[in-house]
Image: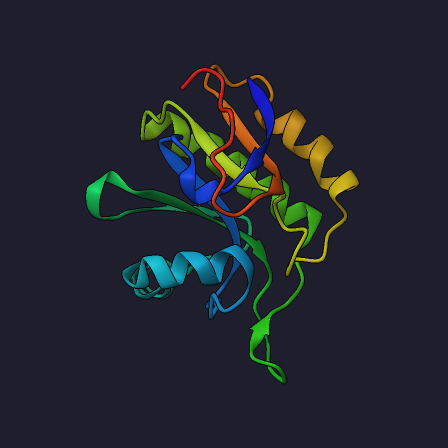
Length: 163
């Protein structure tokens, strides 16, 4: 069940928040930066996991933090741009594969709800009108609420049906 909502994803009551990242991502922009600032261990653990598991774009990894915080890192970007030390842009293929990985994580972790931003459309530079149909196709039939934060409103909780 997909729900487009407006509000602050940090105030979501969903069991997990997912966001787009790149391999060895410095997490220094957008939602990744906010998550890194709030949960600095997540970035360290993500880099360790990438290194230990020979991680590839298109994978998904869940970080379990303090107080039952769960953050799903969807690897939608290729490696790093050597000149600027930032992740390369996201690809639609990687978004599709990472959403497939998210579906598997939802099942194995028995998640009962998840919140996502407008995935890979900020730093990832993909067009929302292209990404949204992919999200509908990959996540639309899930039996859990999936909250898509289509509009970010700082400090305002979104109306999240089903939670």
